[in-house]
Length: 433
Image (cartoon, rainbow, N blue to C red):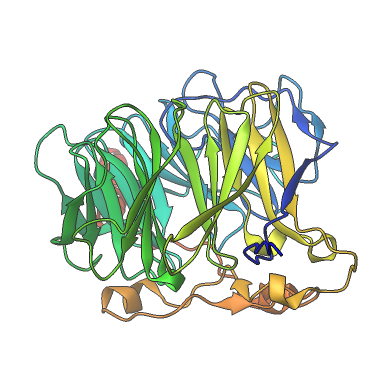
């Protein structure tokens, strides 16, 4: 008698369902090399293909046709190449421009009703365009920015100052991607020289530097700390898209390298540590592929793919706490199309609508575990998590941080100069009397 054994997995039958209510009439800018769209539990944001660098911020509940005239954030004079939300403040976005400036902008709780032309803070330090922004997952006000000037800068956003600089050999060694590990104690980067580097963010020297791909296209790296692995999504010399798995404690060579397909589009990569699923949304693809990552060989199992007749331009995944547990939803993605944004819900089929605890380990809460000062002093902490059981998320609302900025030395100097000019003006007026 022939027995057939199938690997057990809670996620083997995950399926994606596009929402009936979508966001139509968007005009996305496809400048840069990121996912072109960002989202949190309340809003999504995307750069627009208009003059300068406008960014549209839309409530996730306000579906329908958006129209030609929408209020937007216009704080850049050049195209915006990356946009992210502050993970601890729902109403604050960070944008990186082609001019090398990083802007931090606050907007109302109810959304944008009038055009915003003034940002709360400008971070100036890069000499070339911004490639990617990445916020520290545990420390408030700590930001990493990757640039084409062959540097990754770590910022104290509140102080407006650089905490650390990670530079690379070669003037044209542009940074391709940057990622934090789960507790914000390490930073990984990939560059044009085809090396993956691991940094201690409090030291500008690389802990490790290893070859991670042989192709010339963008390669991305993400940490899978709960598995003790680092995952690379790369290209071969023949432009085959590949998946690499590394032992985080031994980077001498990858544990495995497997071909995904031969498509040309760069993947938007998202790793969910709660269910160890790696989501890959290829630009120009009509599919979103997903893999279940495991500790032991072969280290990854292809689950299936979401397929559509129309190809996406970009994509982003919303925080896990925004998922609907009553529908057994384990991920929610926003697909950016040519002129619309389509939410896609990924669900595990279950007959019961009761809370499935084994599907929902405690998830990232979106509140900081460290202050910027504690981080700079060398302190580490694990991310704050919250139960996914309905009603539990409200318990962290009171811990949300507020947007505050101390003045930078340059701002103090400008203020002193303005006051001196005012004093001189008043003295001149008194002298005439």
